[in-house]
Amino acid sequence: MSTPVSRTPESGTSSSGVAITWLGHATVLVEIDGRRVITDPVLRHRVGPLVRIAPDAPAPGPVDCVLLSHLHADHTDLPTLRALERSGPVLVPYPAREWLTERGLGDVRDLRPGDEIGVGGLRITATAAVHDPRRRPLGPAATPAGYVIRGSSAVYFAGDTDLFAGMAELRGAVDVALLPVWGWGARVGAGHLDPRSAAEAAALIAPAVAIPIHWGTFALARPARRAADPGRPAREFAAFTKQYAPAVEVRVLAPGERTAL
Image 1 (tube, one colour):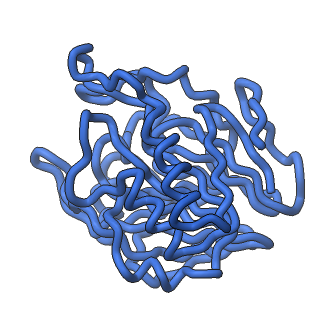
Image 2 (cartoon, rainbow, N blue to C red):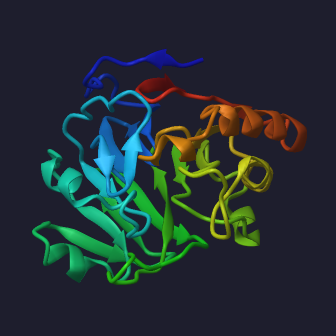
């Protein structure tokens, strides 16, 4: 159901419809109606104590908009953000705009859950998320968010979140759900979805397609802490979704793979 992309995902391949390229971790290139939106871009080989164990991410090419779900360093990576070729805004959770602007980023706009903005014919709405708001160790706090990107199709990017009942408000309203199913360590704690709870989220939201993200990309540099089977969370998510939400199609992508609807 998915096809490999070239080292730079093509732009302008279609003026309608939706295509998804998972670049690893929470970094996803979403193409809708000829517009290109990237989520939580982290394209470097190393971020703090984390090293990339998946193949290097393909260059995304120009983007129209950037979405940031929260300020943790493995989701808000300043060097990657500065290097992106973008023509539109960086949308961030409130009140992160000032902190990012002070670090050299232009056209940053912060949103609270429920806020909506137009970008090149798309409508982007911030949604609630349940996650640690702080940028450790001494950085600012901003309310974590997910986003729904609406054009001729609708894509939900959950960011990093725990399961919460409000996800049911999206039921039947999105075509694709990008759901985190793990992290980078040996386990995930509060504020995260795991394979089972991500499948429960898929059952609440009932998208046509669910794509697992936030798995198998980064690990601590010490080999003893790396997962023996990085692909296990995605496989387990697919199995749980078949049980809890059999009408939802799961598409498991490798980093750098693209799928179209």
